Length: 535
Image 1 (cartoon, rainbow, N blue to C red):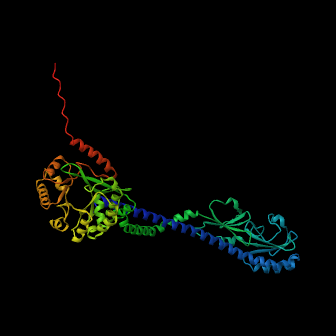
Image 2 (image 1 turned 180 degrees about the horizontal axis):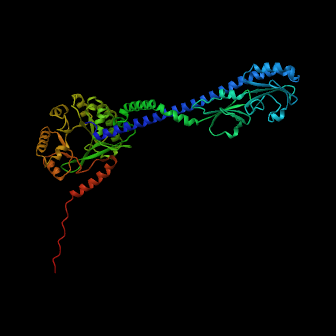
Image 3 (image 1 turned 90 degrees about the horizontal axis):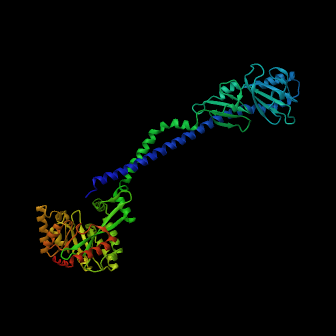
């Protein structure tokens, strides 16, 4: 029997659910990976842009600083004689507007205008007299208000004397501070608290320009920094994400499909059967077998019931055929036998009482059942007898006579289950020499309702009696069936009429109550006392 359509659909749903969940997770991980890569790429590009601008400005200022060392010897000399030299030096740097000489805190000579007299501290109030310094300020002459960048190089032995380089930073700014979309919409040069933005001539306070500032890098050689303004790193990464969706979606679908294929077994009941055996999820039930003559309980048929943590109760009609299909039925039988052995004390301790265990044909044919009986059953020294019910959903193969003989020598009884259905045939009676034939419940149910099957039932009963094989009728549910089977001398009865399958640990309680009830039925009825006649 294959899995029922409901069970198959249910487990296929779980496989798709798992595959879909994995696919979604992979999609999210892939998109997050691309998002993280875009964040890193944006940060790297901003760093590269700022570093490139700083490098260019460093390359502009470094020759001027070196030139100041050569010009420093002119500081203090009269302006007129050294004017040609200053102009020649200024012409060597195209970005340089003017060279100014400072002596004792006074700017006294300019490469553009010659003799001058400006107080250094008034023009550059925020410059101190220590080390190379920069200032960003509007021009005082020629094109007034044009932004300039001033480099101050003091003499080593006198902080109030030195050389000033004045750069036309407006032209440089339009080249160096050019934005790079989308990483920077605006680029700003910062010197102290003064700043110059790309495309603007006005020098502003850098502290007033904080909105949209995304990255700032400082020069390690000169006191200036570069600030980049634009959209946030996260917004740029999110904006770039849609172009990565097709590839991420393709990868997630591929992984989901692979998971669906890989979990074909793991998400099926066959996987859960092995898991349930290992984790003792199967529960042992038993159904009493009643002697039809005296009503005594002469044995039980042991059954397995499965309550999965996720799926709840799973029908034996589903997991038994599946276990046979996936070569797990032998493991199930061993599990059942081991549990029965652990609970032998729950059964009547007499040889006339037998415990019936279903055995699949492959277990029987592989001789594994004989080894299991020798390894598990016999060492327990059980008082109850053991009966093996041979069940087969495919054609039975030839069973060697030596196997039957070995079982008989160990005192094991053999029964053919569901005789008259499936692949059972008369040849099995000859080859297996069974002790018991179990009449299938479909024939029992036909009693009094189905003339054709009732005739088959009578034929099976007659055959068993002529071959001197005991019989057990399964599926007995009504008093009519009990009377019919008793009238035809069927040895034992089993069904809901007497008891439903019950947990193995409940059986002793049921047996005690059943025997008390039977004793009450055997007692003769007391006669009622005669009533006194009226006066």
